[in-house]
Image (tube, rainbow, N blue to C red; front, side, top):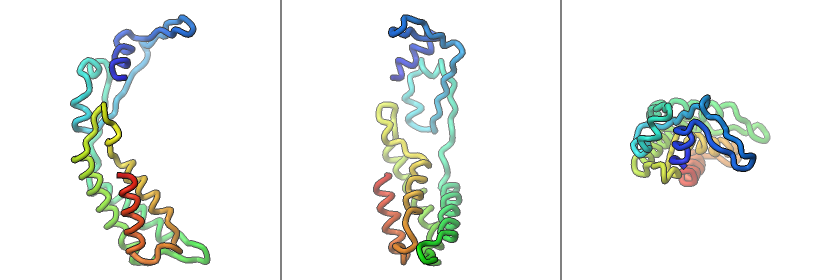
Length: 162
């Protein structure tokens, strides 16, 4: 797939066999977004010379903890279940701890299971952290009575995502 993209960029277009027509690609630009790491090193040099790319830094543990800890805490404080049931206060206080644990899990999985262009299934990002917290926030206040219940739900979602 990467070599096909390189050929289209180098030829400045492609031929559509269905309608026997040349599609001009001179006004097209291809942007590749990647984080620093092995995926960037394994991109073919001939492709990198034809495309513009933007390298984004990996999110820090502190930024993930701050963002997702605040989101989960605010959600738990402002969510009411059936009959006005709310999340216990100790569950709300545990939100930053869960965010820190998820950020450390993301860091560990990114280090040990690095992605390559051939194996993109192991590209862990902050979107995976968002999947964990989205699922944790689906837990109803009626079913999460203790911090243990919250941690069990969180660990289940971390195993599912990572």
